[in-house]
Length: 193
Image (cartoon, rainbow, N blue to C red; front, side, top):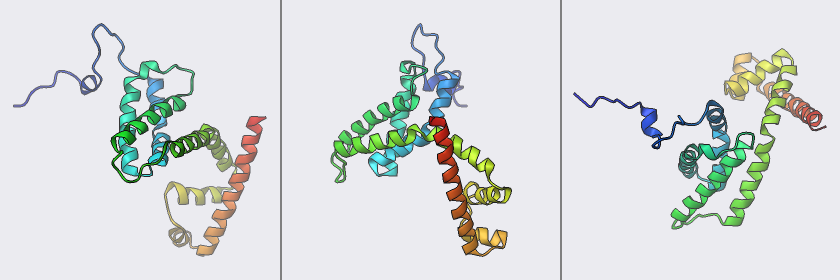
């Protein structure tokens, strides 16, 4: 017989300090935390150029974010707060890995970091605009987009599945992309007015 667990796993992972009644991050914090994971990984990948390094730094940054959840001020930019923590973890990782041959200098990392932050600032608005624009497409165009991007079919499999020439599939996808881009730009212009 093995040991019987009397403490739930989540309590072992996040032990409570003496005299502290907080149970951990609230649902809004956890939702924000989960929502930024992909962007945070891409941010780290852009700075390291290595998927394994980005993943390692992501894990370290996540530990810090969860440990410092009380430091986050609700109503402020969660992504920016997480990026600051991640940037510090990148610096720690770089110091630890300084023996590696390919290490980016601080100016390069600062430039990449700023560019990624600028790109991701408007991502939610672009995503909302895209959703609106997709709904405006003709049903057959929406279906083609769904088959291509949601199901991940390539041009040849779409050609076979829809019994259309491959060139026709690519022309349609190009036209739909241009239509979506134009619509998104118009949507974003109305938001910023």
